[in-house]
Structures are given as C-alpha cells and as structure tokens.
Image 1 (cartoon, helix red, strand yellow):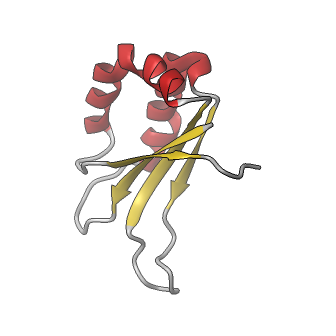
Image 2: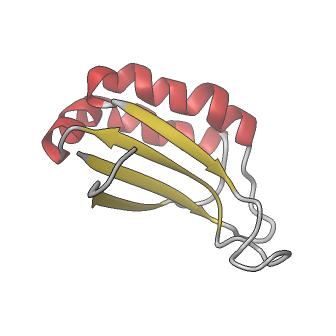
Length: 105
C-alpha cells in the first residue's frame, strides 16, 4: 500500500478554505479516482511541535492506494481537473510525497 501526502505550507497571509477542501475538493478527487483511492484523510493544523508554535503545514491530506501504479492510473485521467480546482481553496503550492505504508491501522 502507498500513501500520497499533499501538504500545504503554513505561510503567513496565505489563503486556505478548509471547508471547501473538506466538502468539495477531496470528495471530487475520490469520485474521480474511484477504487484507486481506497480512502483519504485530511489534517487541519493546530500547532507545531511545541504548544503555541505555528505548524509547518496549515493542512494536508493523505490518499491511500494499493500501489503507485493504481494511484497513477486513477489520477492521471483527471489530474488537470483536480489541479485546476486548487485555486478554488488556496493560493499555496502544495508539497507532495509518496510513501510506502509499512505499518497501517
């Protein structure tokens, strides 16, 4: 199993609409990817490593897929639409990472 993490840097003055991200963008991604997206999670920042310090990322999502090939096959036909929707909730450029899930739930 793999996890694709999409992280949005916590940049002062940046715009990020958490409601749109939760209610519109991520459901759009799941709908377009179908079974290639087993499930996803969304994180909304609270603080950094110490209380009352800013978190390094304002938000992030983690998309779980059986394999890198399954993820790519699921997202490729819809990548343009999904990327274009980013402007509807943020002016940040996301940081992406693909990881192998070694231990899951």
